[in-house]
Amino acid sequence: MTVSDKKLQEAIDTLRDSGVRITPQRHAVLEYLLNAMVHPTADDIYKALEGKFPNMSVATIYNNLRVLREIGLVRELTYGDSSSRFDYNSSEHYHIICEECGKIEDFHYPTLDEVESLAEQVTGFEVSHHRMEIYGKCEDCQQVETQKH
Image (cartoon, rainbow, N blue to C red; front, side, top):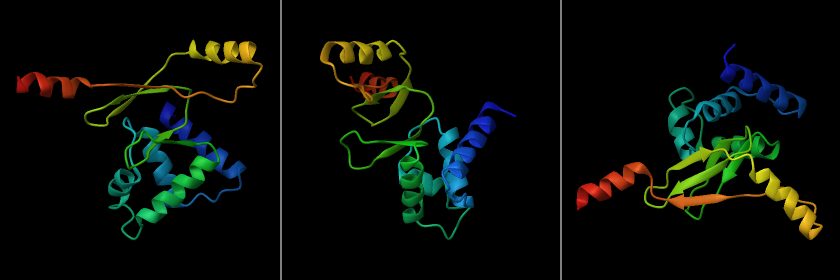
């Protein structure tokens, strides 16, 4: 069993434990997000799955994403543009976002957990979570700009 298969099985178990019905469409959305190297929009997911499910609507995708988000399997990323992007909620990670093309990449930085502990100690708050976004210009957009000059 590959790591991806194991994660998918764990996600299906989470759905089952939450009392959520595992429809073929829900299974496909979850599997797509698990294997996505990018952070797709609902439309991206719809386009990727419409061949397999010709009768499925974009609304079905949104409904499934909402259910998956509510039980904590999927994270909705909103970065000021008009369309949300979705990410399988595996380990804690952060996002770096290209201001030119909107590409989002994951990166891991475990020591930021220490910041939560420090924030609790200094303020007396009980921290529930934090969010960090880094913005810049991806390599592809940098190359395009270099070629223009």
